[in-house]
Structure formats: C-alpha cells, structure tokens
Image (tube, rainbow, N blue to C red):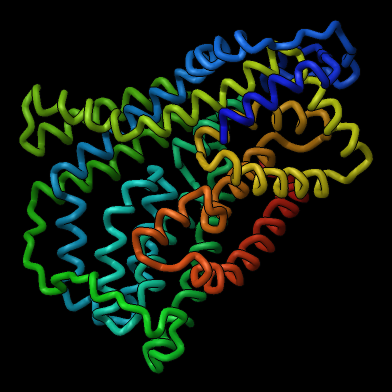
Length: 445
C-alpha cells in the first residue's frame, strides 16, 4: 500500500504545480514565512528517480529507524529474561484474579506500558493468555482482549512519554522532547478511565448472564491457561522490571532537563538492553544474538518508516510539498484555530488507514503538519496532539492496523469486534475533539 502511495505521489509531481516557501530560523526553530510562497519550474520525479528516492528515504529516516531498533532491543532483552512473563504469572496465580479490580488493574498496567515506553506489538503474545483467563473467570474473549491488547493500544494512543510516537513527532516539530507532559497525563487518565468503565459494564453484564455475550455460542475451547501457575517472580525479575521504570524515568529526565533528543534516547536504550541481558545471564554472544533477533523482528517497522520518508523525499524533489501545504492552508484560511485543529485530527484518523505505524506516520506527516500549523496559527504542540490521537485510537478500528491482528489472535470475528468497540470509539472521538479544542483555548504548549 505504501509503495502505491509512493507511485501516486511520483505521478503527482507531473501534475501538481511546483512551489516553494521561504523558511526562516527563529528561537522557536525553523518557521515558514507565510507571505513567501511562489510557484517555480516543474521538477517531476521520473520512474528511475522514484526507486532512488526509496534509498534516500531510508537514509533520511535513519535516526528514527535506529531509535526503533535499539528501543526494541531493550524491550526484547527484558522479555527474553522471562521477567515480564513471570510477573504476569504471579498476578494470574494470586487471589487478585478473583477480585472485581483484577480487570481494571490489568488494563491500567498494560495502558501504562503503551503510554510510557511504547509497548505495542509485543503484547500480541500475551493476548491468548488473557483471553483464556477471562473465559476462566466467567467473562469472554472480548474482555480478555480488552485487558491486554486494547488496553495497550489505548495507552499507546494516550501517549505520555512514548518515544516512538510523541518523541519522534516532537523531534520533527522541533519541540522540547516530552514537553506538554501534564496535559497528556490528564488525557491518559481520562481515556483509560472511560475504557475501563466501558469494558467493566460489558464484563459484569455477561458474567451475570453469559447469553448477553456478543460471542455467545462460539467455540473458544482452544484457549487454555494454568490459572494456578507457580512460576516464581524472582528477585532478578523484580530488578529487571524496576530497570524498565528507571530507563523510562532516565529518558524523561534527560529530555526535560538535559535537552536530550533521539540520539541520546537511543543511547539509553542500548545501555539498558545490555544491562538487562547481563542481569538475565547473557554473555557477549548472547547479547549479540538478542540484538540481531530483535532487529529482525522490527524489519517491518523499519521498512514502513523508510517508505514513509520516501514519500516526503519524492514530494521534496518534485517541489510539491510546499504546494500541498499552501493549498491546505488556503482551504483552511479564515477558519478559527479550533476548526483547523479538528480538520488535522480528521485527516490523521483517515491517514492511519494507509500508514498504520506510529513512527512511520510521524515521519510522513509531521513535516507537512508542522509548517501547516505555523501558517494557520495552530500551536505546533496541538499539531502533535492531533497526530497522536489520529494515529492511536483508530488503530482499533482500521483493518490495516492492530485490531485485525488482535482479533485474529483472539479468534474474534471483526464484525463482533466492531459491534462491541464502535460505541466506545465514538466516545473516544468526541473526547479527542474536546481535548484538541480545549488545547487551542488554553494555547497548549
């Protein structure tokens, strides 16, 4: 799909008039001069240059690509030690699973993982466990998927210090890393709270009457879990999980107080990955093997980022990127800033169908949204917020994104998932709109 977008964009360099803005350096970063747009000679990208642009896109996105690779190396190193699995097993084997708070606690834990250090794809392996656990506790597979997969996705969308979305988007927008953190924490608690209430209403209803389940009558006998597992959550495992907290805290402190950016974040990930591997008992060869294995698992994400940046390379070479920005700003001219922000939010939700990758979408769209925000008087932080919302929550409805994978793993028909989740998504979109509008009112920065 991304390749065909690249082809269409290359064709557009023959059709869309080429144009340029002048950019000026200010204390706030590189800004577009709104009065400087002028049309220039056409510079179409021919078929051969299209393929050259793919190479250039990967080079242009190198910083982001290596942040993703080293970030996942750290997460993968911890997962290989069994610390996370041991913690989950400890939770499953405790009496806590019989509490009414068990489902909300699981959702909060997973949401925090998605919001802070960018947990997403690695939750897929845990979904069958929580589906089986939910069924064993008198719920259904939908509740099990919400406890794990949906909770991570909501946290990922309600990002606070997620380096793969907020970190990358703010770097492209030339904003201080993780700035605006308090507002995003408020957003996190609101969205997670609403999600928990929605899921618990459904969970309590089907526990009282199983026939109320949207999946009633379906066969989920393939899901089995030992809810009395005695896997020990050792001191070593506790140290490793504490290390994850320390790593996130270090990145946040460095970004807010020491002006760290993507390269420094990647350095912290490398150090944490090595230390985690050593604590897990790995020697040099084991650490190298983990690095190679983790990189191989992130190949798809790397390709998405590289191809996404290729779109911008072609638009830049064809000199149509400023023409697109000028056209969009003309359409939005005269609209109040809140309406412009809302349009950005809608565009991001639609774009997520085509680029279902947080980092890839940031690489593709923020270089366009940033100058557009400048031209229309929208604070850059609000442009990042619109990207964050549009990229995140629609992951749970678009079939090209995470929900299709999660439903496949949990053996939940997509139609059943939509019937369950669409009312919640409607509530989420209203909340997204509210927070974007309120951000314009308070000039969120």
